[in-house]
Length: 483
Image 1 (cartoon, rainbow, N blue to C red):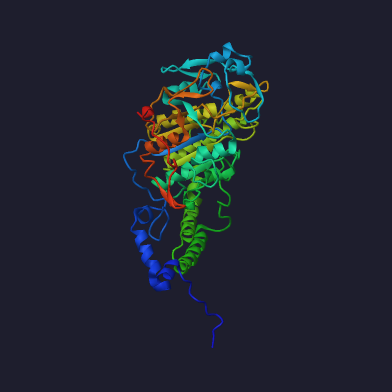
Image 2 (tube, rainbow, N blue to C red):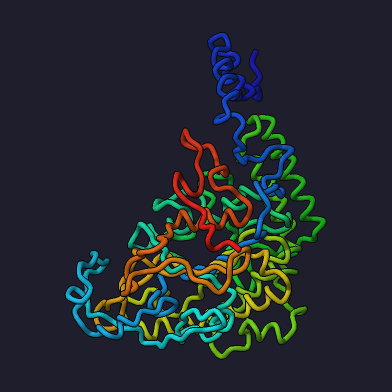
C-alpha cells in the first residue's frame, strides 16, 4: 500500500558519490579536496556559521580602508582637463594626418582637424600641476591629487570599455571591482551593503551589470541607491510594524533552514537568508544615512547643495552621502553622474557645451568631498578615484567634438596612501598615446587593491576550472605613486 503524500528524500551530490559505484566517486572527491586549488581556496560562499560580509584581515597593513570611485561615464577629454599640450595650439586647424602622422581608426571615422583646447590651462597649487579652467574648485585641492596621465584601455567602444574598467574583462558577467573588494575584505558595517552605487540617473553602457558580482556570491554585488527620495525600492515596511517585520523574517528563515536540510546547504539558499537579514537591518540604517538634518549649512554649501544648477546639487548630494557611507564603514562606494547633461562625457559634437555642463556638475562637489574628508581625518584612509573608460582624441570629430581615445588618457587618485601633487606617466606631445609609464587598467586595479592591503595575485576565486582574480593574469602595483 502506497501513501500518496510520501516523498522520496532528496539525494545530495555528496550522498550520490558515496552510494553509487561502491563509493568510488567519494574517493575521487576526497583526493580533490586535498588539493589546494580545489579544497583550501576560500570560495567566499556563505555557510551556516559564516557571514560573507564579515570583516576580514588584509594580507598586509593597509593604507586605505574604503574606496570612493567617481565614475565619469563617457570618457572625459584628457587634453581639455589635466593633460596640457601646447602643440595643439600651434597646429590648431591643420590636417592631423600631416601634422601627427599615422592615426588609429576611430569609432565613427569622421576625423576633422587638429583641435586645441577651448579652455585655458594654468599651473595650480604649490605642486604646479596643469589644470584647465574647467575645474576652478578642483584646482584648489590639486596638491592632494595624483594625476595619472598614461592610462590605456584595450577597448575603443563604451560597453566593452566599461566592463573592462569595472571588472578587468571586456565581456559581460565578471565581478565588478567593488565586489572583489568586498570578497577580499568584507564590510565593517553589517547594517549596510559592502558595495554601494549611488546612481545619479544615468545607466552606463553595459547596464547595471557593470556593478554585478558575476560568479562571486550575490552578497558582494553593488546595491543601487538613489541620492534623494526613497533610496531603495520597497525599503519602507508600509503599515507593518518592526515587530511584524521581524516575525515575517523569522518565518522566512525557518522555511529556508528547512530547505537547507533538504538541499544540503546550497549556497544560493544560504545567501538568501543573509540577504533577508541585511535588508531588515537596512530599514533602520538607510533612513538614518539619508537624514541630513545633522549636517551644518556650511557643509551643505561646501558640497554645492545650494548651487543654482540642478545637477550640481544632485552630484553634491551623492558626494555628501559617500562621505557619510565612509563614516559608517561601507567598503566601496561608486558614484555615477546625473542625467540631463546631454550625452554624458561623450561629446562627439558640442564639446564646449557638453564638457562645460559636466564639469559644472562635478567640480564643486568633488572639491568639497576632498576638503571635507581631509578636515575630518578621513582622506588618509579613503582612496578617491576619478575617471572614465577612456579619453578623447586631440583632433576633432566633425567640427566641434572629439572621438574615443583608448591609447592614452587621464585619471586621478587622492588620499588612501597616494602621493598628492604629482603626475604619473606621460602621453606624447599631442596627448594622443601614452609613451611613458603606461598604466593598464589591470595596473590600476592592482594598485587599488594594494592600497587596501590586498595582494591582487592572492585574492582568487575558483571558477570555470581555474583561480580567477580581478587582474586576471596581469597587473602590476604602481609603487611610484604610493606615499
